[in-house]
Amino acid sequence: MAKTITKFRIFTIADYIEEQKWLEEQHKKGWKLVKFIPPFLFKFEECEPDNFYYQLDFKNEKASSDYIGIFNDYGWEYCGSCFGWNYFRKPEKLVENESEKEIFSDNESRLDMISHIYKTRMIPLLVVFLTIIIPNVVRGINNHSGAVRNALYYMFLVLFIVYVMIIGYCGRKLNKIKNDNKK
Image 1: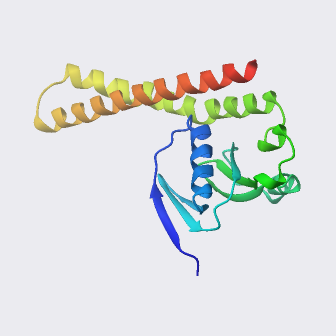
Image 2: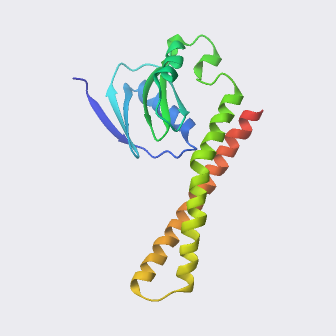
């Protein structure tokens, strides 16, 4: 049985490029991805150190055999799915030119994926923020009495700060990726 390790690493929905590079570095060190354990654990299996390209595709649905088959036809091995992301890898030795290092054949496909991330992840996050977090912070400011109310107010205040940071960070980063791919 092969040796395995589990590593903790946080990536947001906007950090998928960094996640790909990190997975490539792990493979170069002799650890190939075998499983993603939500929310922030990666399980690796010991392997021969080698150069592999890792790519993530966001579908927000279970990967079908046809979908996986399309990528297999181009040399991409399916590694699994988590939170709507599908993980693929391909050995560098199968890459003959620059375009084969990525699963996307054109900028339009990349832009479609980013648009899909906005629709299925960012908009719901914003809706929760606007309909639950903000009203509860405002209510807490107006009704400041009792220990339980104070605790709830501070809890929603912390959530407010976290949501502002996440929405701001992911929104800026996804917009930058989107603008870079429009060129």
